[in-house]
Image (cartoon, rainbow, N blue to C red; front, side, top):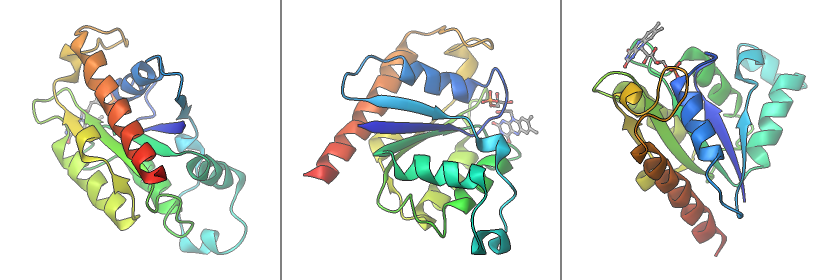
Length: 180
Ligand SMILES: Cc1cc2nc3c(=O)[nH]c(=O)nc-3n(C[C@H](O)[C@H](O)[C@H](O)COP(=O)(O)O)c2cc1C
């Protein structure tokens, strides 16, 4: 099964991107895991731009969303919400509908003890507007992320690998049960 990872952070040493890289490194012969890298190259969403032919970055995003069986989003919290670049990407998927009934795991990592819970809540709300099948057991905020990984991306607390394995297996179960 194909799973697409989307990090809400453009930062080079992003903790959210690191979490996706850890998931990517989990050996699972059934899973092909790709991390989408085009978030920063998308134009700002406007319905007028959506009326005609979509630009190449938008077509690439839509093709990747349509071509996968499930999605894992990991997002930071900026000013109590998800980053604008992530919301912008999700806005591009409203009219094209790739999230509809697609199993999605939603994570939000933050250095704080609240774990980006407000960004997480706003992400869940937007995913519900998109009709996504959010997998509850694979969706949660991750507080105090720098107690689990270092600022340069090394694993500090090995339990994070087990936690993220659970995200991957929970999402995979939801994908399989949707196929039955
Ligand atoms: C402009 C800005 C606003 C932020 N606002 C919040 C916030 O509201 N809540 C929070 O938990 N962290 C906030 N942070 C801290 C981020 O959680 C932290 O920088 C995190 O490491 C970003 O994720 P990343 O490592 O994936 O880039 C903010 C950071 C920046 C730069």
